[in-house]
Length: 452
Image (cartoon, rainbow, N blue to C red; front, side, top):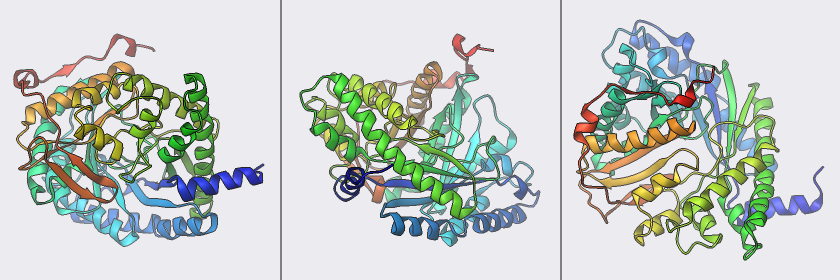
């Protein structure tokens, strides 16, 4: 039962601390859209997405008005297109990407995810066609997001896929050079990708999901930061407890919105993702939360320990507030989307190597990082391999969303606007990894994957 104090706290969190629902994401199965004729397949995809998501945006807006809770994004995720299109007699799936884009625009959503392939153990011919179509698709559409899963704890790391994705990222950057490589901001390379992720650019409707499902992603770094201002100088026990209590309140709001959306859309509720997702706005930064624990600047010694505490406390508090927690659930550290991270990079304190260390203990991985445009495909692949190894060995989801910004050098910046923000171009180790990436094959799964 909510009392007046709880209500006033929530009002303050919304009005002054950037609390919002980051996204309502409607997952849609497209298996029944398969067709050997790619034009017919595209038409089926467009029609089904428009039919199923017809009321998504207006429903989100109704909930916003009735509850006074900002819902920043309304999004759609679909079955990985490489699986839907397997019977299509076409060398390119760009037409399917354009059908997704057209449907997303007609529905009025912010993004649509699922131009995806799962190749952690090997490629089908459809997987190869989809991956080859990514640069053209992301350069010719506005709302489509793409992801490729190259590793799992059970299968190990598909190094052929890792090598290929370095080249795909480079080509995508080149085709969107007039926008600072914006296409790469809509492309994620995963290890241990989850099937119910509501966040972009990595969302897709997994093979174990039902016909349709509503997943909700909450936010609230500003709320956590404000709560920690009241416990300055206290022990880490107090810090952890404060984060847990705050995460509970944030997640309860997410559960409320998820239930309302599920009921009004007539679609089953899937999960609430607990992730603290920052924005470029002042006061909405994960980096500033870490600094409020006593760090001079995010990236200095102690940062990884502080992030580990934050991630764990968020999960412990949130899991008590919802019967179905899923997605990624933790703390994101996307550089371009977090003003504190940007400041730390510009100050020379936060490096690519330190970010990689931090990904061992937080959600996802190296996210929205700009690097010099002349960074080689092999170096990009090696960065992906390192991040995949962290995910595989630690049985967690990791990912890379990296932008080799065409024509940019270390110290320059790229501008994407909106929630994607801006990013300083970071230094990349100049030593080469070409021979390592050229080996190909698979890095075997770790011994602890043998649990059956």
